[in-house]
Length: 233
Image (cartoon, rainbow, N blue to C red; front, side, top):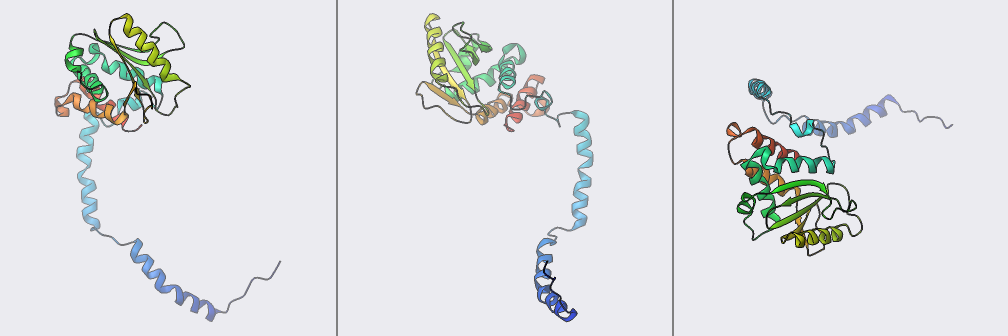
């Protein structure tokens, strides 16, 4: 092992004097305080009372986070199906669904179409074949919409092609018009497959409430909080 180099005290002092300007400049850049410290302390103190009131009123923690949906596509699909169901949220649920459908299937008055009655189902086989299970389906008197959801997973081989064929066949049997929608961060190259993004669903959730939070019904609050949750995906 080679011997460690030795420096004299004079050499060490000279080296420290050389680095002194750099040290002073670094200290000014790192510890510069743009705001008076007293005002910062006062700002945090003023937040104590509003935060205490917010805790008592609830709403700080998103209920869909507590429900443990995470990024599980099956759980998210079931939650979305429930929020679209008329029996859960009434007119708010119908507005939420209409907003999502109008964003991807244009030239149809979905508010009027859904007002005649509709049904939402999750994980069904349009032709009774268990290998063709579509995440969500919406049926009205004149339309059948199949929605395939993706968050992290990729599409399987010919998955959308099979869904297009299944929904089209079921629509013919019911004398309705079939639609396939891909709800995902990416779109499909198939002309028959329409695209819906998660941010668009979130915007539809917010729009469906359309009132101040203090005047929203419980169902509207659930829908809006679901929109907030989608922002984390």
